[in-house]
Length: 294
Image (tube, rainbow, N blue to C red):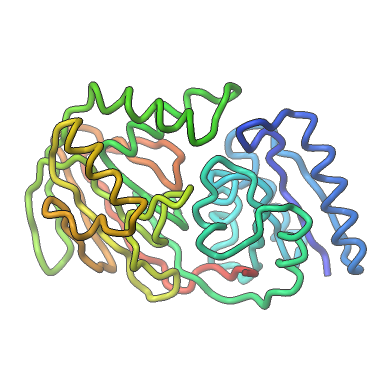
């Protein structure tokens, strides 16, 4: 079987460009040791992982491995949905939300062995404003934080940096008015955040939709009403205790499709990658759209 490994050489809090060569060597050693025909590629820019994955599908790859963080996984997966070509993950990012939820080992060699042993199984994907996501898409404070965090490309990342950037954004963030329509209900909200989750967690154990399942054919809509910085920080602790949905200011719905509109262009993120759209965005579930070895 032909296996394509797509490596982000700078994924991770302490990664350097030179790490890419070592990662490629590890991938070839492990996979060729099991008799696979292996091609390795290092990403060079935003969007490159998606291009490489699409080319791998055309070339007849039987498996595509995304070695990097949630953004790299997102790019690779967006080229694999509806193709039948399975995805495997070697987690090397700051949050690794999807890999954590799937129980994929953090050590690279173990993650590759895990991918070899696991049988491909279908999972859902989500789509918002034409962008695919596997983990979480969001509008509001988490999208603003994603934009701040993304602006630090080439500088230090990691949980400590994320917390620092989050607090800085909280100090200046103004809740946004949204109109939300799910097909069965419509409500207006001045929201701190609006999340559409396919998987339970952002990463690092922060669970925004604790009961979300990757294969139930639905997305979890989580809306947190406006609050001040002190209340927001107090609420944030619930992300790590699995109790966020018990907060009185949080609404939770299971949806197949949702439309969100505002009075201005909408800032959002897909799996932590920042994006913008017009004043209306639509999100929907893509049931069983991706096969994954995990």
